[in-house]
Image (cartoon, rainbow, N blue to C red; front, side, top):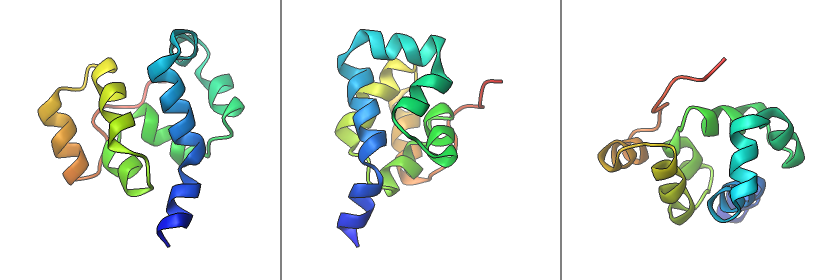
Length: 97
């Protein structure tokens, strides 16, 4: 079961890793998010988890915390909010329209 969860999270982890390490990818997240999500073949739920910073749901689906923490920091999520979000999945911010 754990392998299945990890495989499910592969594209999400790949995107978050690229946003953490490639400034141009992170810039696209701010300017052309829909196309970026399409390039990484993310589901609607995965997109929602990223946009609302639902770190708990991302973690539960198999995304590594070592990827989530720097991304959350870049997205101005306070450390204590991040920790609470890991313990209690739910959006840490509202989705932008």
